[in-house]
Image (tube, helix red, strand yellow):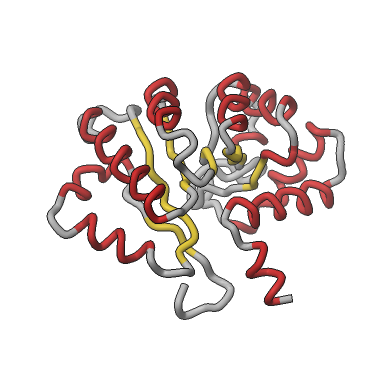
Length: 215
């Protein structure tokens, strides 16, 4: 982010590595990193109960709460990772409501009802390649149900490549396939999807002033 003017970053400890934040100097290093104005968010952070060899759930929850507190202190939006942990993630974030500065529920995989609750709390819903999958009906229903003003486009690179590249290495070059599917589901043009979701991302990461200055 310091080498390239057009690059911005996020910093955080993923739940798979939650134990690493318990090291004596790790929290300090993360705090110092977040002081960089080019680091626009804290994440991705959250809970991942999918794999048995992931850190103990109590450790994940503790580290998640620590980082949410840090986000509130540093006035940064959050990028939330939640896998097979819908209830615990929502409950923890609900407790922080009003103290956090918004963010995105990354790679959203839960129900329309949960999506609407997060939107009420001021969060965006991250939509990536899964929306193009034949078995991605649940996410398609979420996209159909929520406003376009609550969606941001994602890749989860190098994973979750959209059809027709499913199973191959993902990259930002595949974003048009996600936008095309969202446009079809919402009954709007691809140009409108790009325009609205780009503005959403600027609001999410508080970069509107940056873009105006560069223009």
